[in-house]
Image 1 (tube, rainbow, N blue to C red):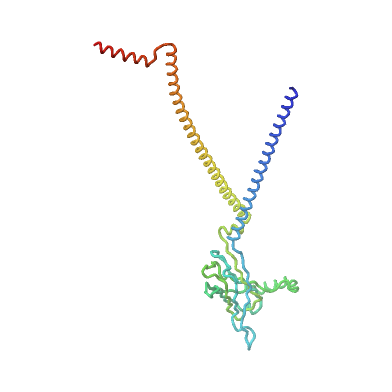
Image 2 (image 1 turned 180 degrees about the vertical axis):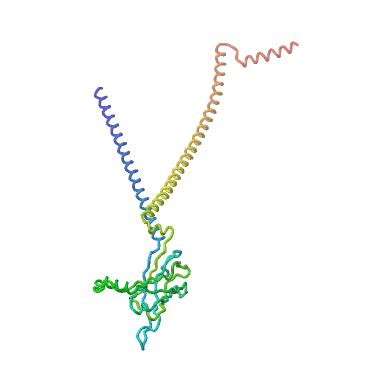
Length: 336
């Protein structure tokens, strides 16, 4: 008996240890699973926020600058040296339907690389005209601006030449000036007629230049200004805002799902309770009817047993007593 009890206790403790180890392993698995889901979900939300901000940045921010070379053409003279027509050029911005962003102001500048030659110094002021046209030839806008070389006195020119003469000898420095002429200061693209061609004309036949470039720079303001000049701060604020709204949506959806599950459970429990109540009522009604039937049968059986006992004891039954009473009443009526 003692050995069997020891064996039972050992087996019981063994099964208890197995149950506890299984429970601990299952709880550890659940913890690892939930922590993994939490980490993966957090990383997914963070990467989603970064992706959304990146997409918003590249779709909202325009290209800051466009540079197009300007190949000015003119008609040369036959009898004398020089040019016999105004230098002009047609610059194609894009082969697509649209280059500039609608609603974004742009600055259109013409960069002229001009030598400090006697001809340019004697030239004085000259006019530069520009025409913006769409692909179908529609004139969107036009302007004409004046320009000239920056003035430098003879003494300043001599001192500069003496100072930079070694570099001028080796070709590192040249006697030239970069003239920047602002053609359009606040140009906005028309959606119905996007600009694809710019026509430029320099209204002077005595100008000399090395090269010309057309630069289109975006004039940023508001949110675009902060996103371009403060990229780290704007990125942190944008990603944090995306995280907040994504977490809010996830939390609200989770609460909505939990609330629906609770409602379904409550409805199921309520319906189950109603069914149980109906079953109980039917059981109670069935038991009550059975009890009534049993009570009636018990009464009848008790009456029968009482009459049988009276008959056995020789006592008159109820029927005999009633019959004697009827006979006495009839005899009294006859006597009268």
